[in-house]
Amino acid sequence: MEDDMFDQIVAVFNSLVSWVAAGAMVFGGVVPYIPQYRDIRRTQNAEGFSTYVCLVLLVANILRILFRFGRYFETLLLWQSIIMIATMLIMLNLCTNVRMATELNTKRRSFIATDSKDEEIRIPKRLFLDFDWNYFWLWSQFVDYLQCVLAFTLVAAYITYLFLDSALFVETLGFLAVFTEAMLGTPQLHCNYQNKSTEGMRNQSYIWGSVCFFMCHQRIHRSQDT
Image (tube, rainbow, N blue to C red; front, side):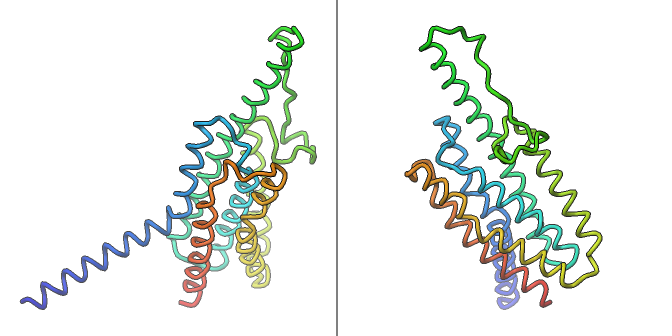
């Protein structure tokens, strides 16, 4: 009787640990961006955070989702990619609004200094559909980022559909997803170099990102082996 009770306790404990591990796997990569989001919103300053980090994670997770059509991996990792994509879109929305508000305030101060009227203030709009590479990923509205992500997803999905039967293409797709995610720190490094400062950057984001990258990589390979 005592052995049955002990076995039940162990089973419940194992189940609890599995649920906690699953939650950490799905949301672990998102958690570090919560304080980053709060800092940007509180200070209304997004200069310390590179939006190209969002680009890297969006591309990596979209490719990972497409890779699943050719090589099955755990649904847990699929949800992780979906949640990360949603998180990066939220970060992009905030950074775009903050950047445009900062540009508007800067121009307003400039116009006031020259005794000009506020109604004369104009901020040139940079649109995705202009296809101006000088302003790639520096657009004026969040909808332009959505258009870019949607266009990339549709093109990548169509190419994947055409070459899904090719083992070489599927493996290349998986490699690109992993390689892109491994380059997560590069945009922030470039941003810090340009700003000559690390102010506004959350180091925890990249520590957690590296840990989650390693764990996901291992889980994907484990899923393929089984």
